Image (cartoon, rainbow over all chains, first blue to last red; front, side, top):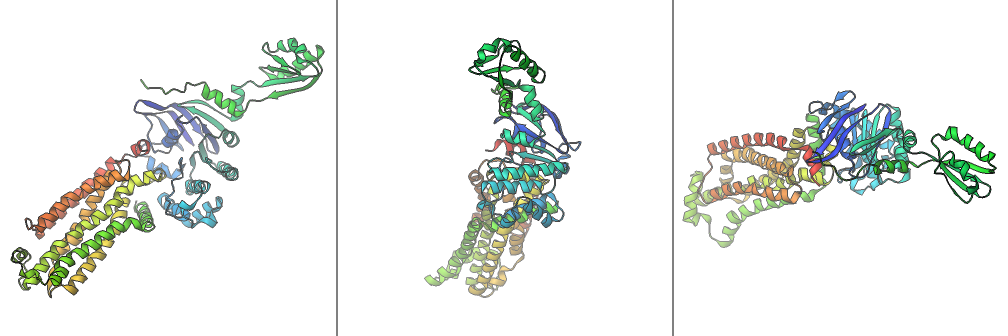
Length: 309
Length: 264
């Protein structure tokens, strides 16, 4: 389990992460969303013990991450950096062998073979890293992060620049790691990926703006629109609709309303409109996209840099 | 600890083997270190028909080496070959310098440093592996060049000169001072490499380290200073202490956070 409590980080007078508290449970994937410069990479670096927080604490598996514990905790953490960071002159297998040695992986060759197989890299094992495509390099970097079978995975944009096929393979792999009890925190700009992969989504813009399952976040932040299509001019029945939503609008055959509780109000609305003589052709809910939810969240926060006093 | 250190050291060697061009400065220095003394001591006198022993000044200076059993020509040759031995001290330093200067800043530029620092490797292990990764290959090349130097002396110099070279002084210089001086220089280069933003700056600072050694070399050649065995042992002790202090400094000055967050 990863736990961050009141985590803050300043560089000089610039506050990059401000009082962020969250946890990632074992067997859970949390996606960290936020615009560029929101503090995602800094947060991941603090959780990986690469940089120290200005204030607040990080715990990995219940053990506080400090100067004295960081070395013993590192073998529990798999960290995928923003760029793959492979040694270009070394082959795939040589790159992995170095990391297996540094992490003290038992049965090194078997572990490497397993990692290569997982990412279908076996037939390119002797290829130099410099010869690999961006997607392949990312796959090797992911294999490297998983090589020592860490209990905690910190992934900085794991699917950045990957084609859809590889993205799907990575998602599948993350599902498998989650099923084996791994706590996974991944940062991404890909809202679709966040929604599909993560159990919960954390939206960070210097401060933690939200942390909820994607559907809860959507419900919490957006009211869905109800669209009613009638036979004939919808404006003739607008007064009936405005009893439910005073700001309801009508255009041609369609009326649009925002209801607070569609589950309860839609049947009443239909009854009222039918009683008023409307011939209803269709009633449907327009659900906000996750992108709308995200933009609403980050748009609500001033984007200008905040100076610490 | 040793496992991680050796793992990274092996990676350094492998990386260097795949980038042999990086060893060209060491090889060029080795060729010069061998060619120069033989040209001056053997080839030029033979071609010009002016033996070294005919030069009164050289004969006078060469008495510093002792070896009264040698002919005048042989003693001057021994003196010069002993002097040129100091060039072999500079060789591993100049050669390894470019490698060490690149060690940390190069990793940072290639973006390989962050995943490396996320592993359990300690700063001490990282820095020692980097120093050894630069030192060992250059020492191997230097040792090869030195073997050629001695073989060349045995074949081309006056009788007795080769035997005269095999002294405690030579052993102290070759086995003691050369690796220690190289270690000190590399450790300094590594400190510079972990404090600057690009390899060129690291190399430019690194060159400054050679200056005091060059001064020592010039002092030897002009006869204004002769390194006795005692001086060499003292110098070795100073270098050893200096290396230990510098290793401590380089660990203390290696600021992981600054390297990751301020370097671009």
